[in-house]
Length: 340
Image 1 (cartoon, rainbow, N blue to C red):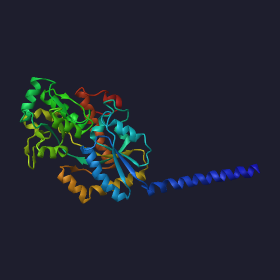
Image 2: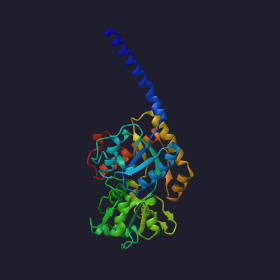
Image 3: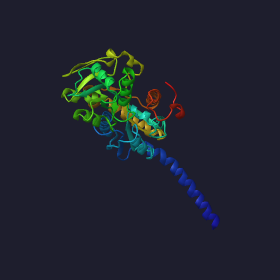
């Protein structure tokens, strides 16, 4: 009797194991079967938030499920949102909406993980520029820099969160010109720009995509693109390059955005493949193409190894640049981040 029970138990165990082995791939192949959540690490209204909402809407139609976009800003370089998603199951049902700025979370002490814990999908990005409050007395970048050098640390500047690409651009601008601004961190581009419009700060560094409507409406005054080339913006005119007045900025600039989303790198390959296909298909839709053109975004569409390689380069560049500018909490070498 006992032997029969034992044999039955063994058969049941074997059958259960076989069932489990066959169910797992089926589960991945059927993905997704329920709604997906996309947790954006920056505040609502910024470039990362808007691009994730635009792409998620198209991916939801392709995948035939809802993709609910939420915001979880805070921490350092998006560390609060990343930590939350990293602690969820690696089942593809929780995405993280992030940007190139998130690669500095480790070197700034925000968390202990390198960026390679993510499997990223890159939407693209828009170039950064420096602008001021519409009532500020500065008509060009040279005048602003002269005032900042005459009164170091007195002019307040916003540039997203600490360690963001906008913050890094501000640091590079200060290092290349010798000017010193009083950096005031905000949990994203939108609150940074609002602070500049209301006069809470004088200077703001964010992207052209994020500032364009405010520039056209006269709420902000553009001083210079933080890129080698000027830019002709309709209803505003030509925005000159900061490099024209300060060629030494080439030591650290330009730095390009890489806005997108990611899942945990240890998610099943089948799920990665489904999301990659839907992501690439979404970027090719007329809705996304029109949005990118009207908002001055250069679309990327990189996924998998190609996207991971780009983020690895950005992690190296950003981390070591912050270290050299004296703005890093941890030495990149201690984290195993190679020099660029």
